[in-house]
Length: 302
Image (tube, rainbow, N blue to C red; front, side, top):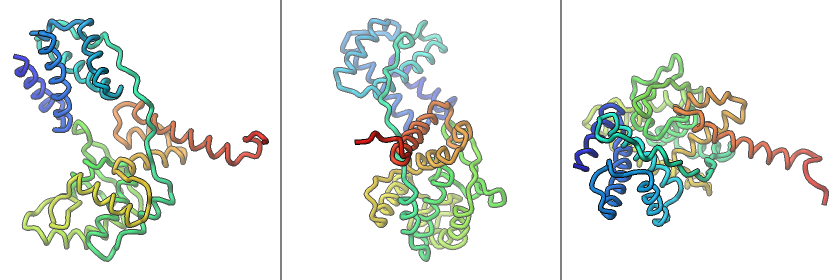
């Protein structure tokens, strides 16, 4: 019975919410965690769970030394699960609504400085197909703030050189148009007219994806991460560059230059403004650092 409800919920997520495999995996893990707790406590039905039971469940999560972020995610997942079950008439109340989500530690997004970016842009050998592709990956990810998954699935027909925009399919199949500048446009044209044609000839399979690997097949998100790590090594940088760092850098540099927070939210494809506001903490910290180190009367005399 419990497994049937979980499978029904997964079908709902796939069909109505268009959830990714990654999202489905985490929902299943979170719900199965509750099922294990129910088995241990001899609770047979989801309808038997009340506020006190949820509090006991939270205690077991903290006993496992889970982070506040992990606990918050599990509670959020179970709220959604029960909300769905309420809609379907399988339960008559949602006990997880009564529990406050634990506040997460504020972790500021890491980003690259302009000097570090310039070092990365000088690394790729633009006379080779892979070098041209790697340059476009850097240029486009920094120019648009595109997610790595969005980058890997970008297709040729999504590029409009006249308007200098790309059409991106984001989370929940939501579409948004992202502008790109002259540097990304130049790198894109060079790669599409030269490097990509060479890479495409190495595979018998024709596809419309922009980014191809050395064998001419569509690149994977793991492949993009590997490329970025290698570029960092070649540039002799000490930073750890994951794809999201370029997205963080995109947002931080825009806000540093005076961009509107709502505009950055739309470009990033954030559903909630709170997801974008974390970047204001970064810019405020940088402004304070600049002030304290530059203003003649900012520091106390020793």
